[in-house]
Image: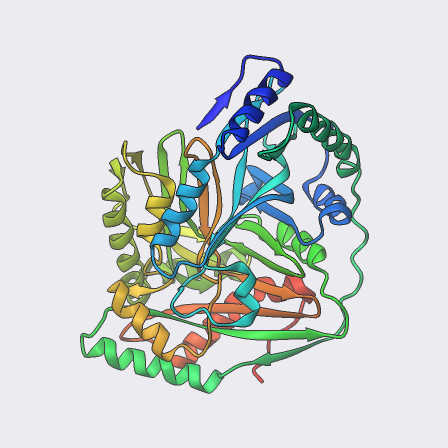
Length: 472
């Protein structure tokens, strides 16, 4: 819980220091307005001081953007069960949080930003080891933009047990001076990307896995399973992650744009799929399953939209997702509202069947409780959940890491938002791994599913270098 002090900041620090001396974990945060700055400029400026320790989160249509600089504290877990969600929540609640926002109307307070792995029982790829089964950071500096409001920066500091109030105050003063540097960032012109070598992995094995899955579904062993594959891009030069982010912001405006840096690697993407949002007890989720391409004209786009709304295979796949999410939310929400049929959600490259679900949070539930019970939805795992997950472990020829897993943020008052990390890539210096998957039901055709994954890979391919995709 946040304690908002109606005291001087010095008095607030004295209380926090006293708590820390008694063994309490304490965060003090101070929110101040700043001159207008572009989120990309802030992100770029933070590289000098905090390279490898930056986070970026931009909601669809840029309604809210948060950019973090510096890892003030890291909460992570290697737990290989659903207890990992609870571990993160318990550790976050252990901190006593003091906020000072006398000059601010926003009062964001301290924020955790991070995510979880898709499947802790199949997460052996060495590239993902630093990300753990769950990893969240408390940014030292968090710059926040909301439409219609001036940007603000929240400085967060963990008070050390042997720290004095004078030392803590001096540290805040020093950090306040950093803000001028962080607000002077500029984006240099994007250079032409170096040539990439693109490689597919286990393509024939993946196509065969779809045939195995459809056989099992026809036998009644399960209803649906999602199978994903990956490709790699290798370059002679370091990959321009900031340039990729700039492209995603411009081209994928109806998606969540994100980056989670971890040392030399960056998990970056633009996902259209919200898992859950809580704002003042109001819960919002979304079912996004069933995909078709965008048309080259308005007429063709409408024809494709109509075809998707009438396609039995996609409607069946979508109905599984709606049923599961609705039933999961009934355990945590009241006054649940779910439309009778799907609409359409359009991104630059594809359009999806879309059903929003809304309700109000029950007294004893939390954001991470809902994340735990929703993940993985049938849109990312399958149905029944455990049988689908078992099949993915057996026949999917890769480890997903954080791909298709919950990523997002949470504050100290129970608010926050998580999306599902699709349309994403793990970039590590000169190489990038890109991921895409599709829902398999009884009538799925391997070659058509392969073409669907190519379509879903285009946003990240475009962001990383505008590559065309030809089968290798």
